[in-house]
Length: 561
Image (tube, rainbow, N blue to C red; front, side, top):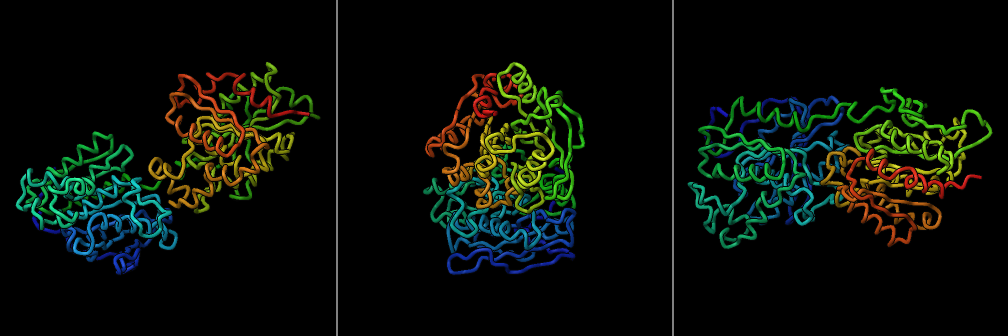
């Protein structure tokens, strides 16, 4: 990257003249008898009403520096909120204290997102030198409970969605070997002071402070920049991190700034930095979450496309409906209903294989005639009401869709004739609805359920965790099938038919097996089965099971009068 560099020891650039609201000295936590503070710069407006956030972490060898005059503040002109944090320095507390502080700052910002108009699902960490080291650790240690620390808002995640690391140290033990004008192995080096002893004599402590230690495939994207003539932090430190990220399959870009020392600046640097959050924190387009009324009105064989007016969203919502043979000719007959829920990134048309098998099973007299409703759950809702009220999928289904179906079509409108089934994310949704509303459903069928729990939701689907649950683990718990099953076990036990099925080659096998174990512990009767040779493919899963296995369940469940 042929960038002309300025050589200086810190990245303390002057803050440009900005039209930004500045909230100074906000206390995000208290530790060691002192307030930990941040300054929050807010742009004038946001295109979607909520600002993505860049957390700036200052350098200074973990022993000096402050949140004043942050170079990241210029990003407010591009629509980003910028939070500049202070953290405990090495004379006050040793590692992992500064990382605990940075994580606490991120959690505090998420907890106060509504007050300041922040988007809790779009956070980046940016730092230089010691700040780059802490930014990198924020990126790689997401989902590492031992590094969360005890400071406030522990029901919020500290994970970030992007990292910009300017010449941050990584593997302290290799710094001197790579060439440096500073003796990093010395007992009074910044690194030794950070961990509380000479680094070569405290290899385990040094490893604990190394961002590379925690690299995993689910880490956020990284932009790493380092001068090739840095006299303090060897260029090789960034190379080591970049190689570890790439080996793990993490998206990472490493830019060498030619002729640069311990710091650099210039238009090309700014352009590289600007492009990175624009790419990785860009707000999803409205259509990315799917439309309440699916614009694709195609009707898979045996289904009809319909819409209804939802009082909850004050607009139209679509669904597909399957009516069994004889529905149009025998106008006196009423039918049980199966609500089918699609997976992540899917739509109501994803239920076509289910409908095809249902029709064959009915015609072969292997299951009672039933209505099937293919639900529009948007693309990534988890079938819950989003924390901000913008996507109230749960409420639309329970308050609007089910009453609409019962009043429009000839259903047996009682819980014992109402079942819910879903695949993948839809399996999560089926468990969510069934165990949250046992008074509504007599049967729950969880097929290859994406049964995320409290430990996995933040690191497997961090962005969706923020979007759906506001980054709030307590709110997630309110909607979690794991918690709902325990909370309503007495209402479910002996009153609901439950089954769990998953392919033996499905990456979700262990999670489904664990959920089966939970139901066993709760003494909730259920069927659990695995399908040999099948991975995570709904079409293959249903075709392999066949009509007898899929719908023998409903033959038992629906004892139609």
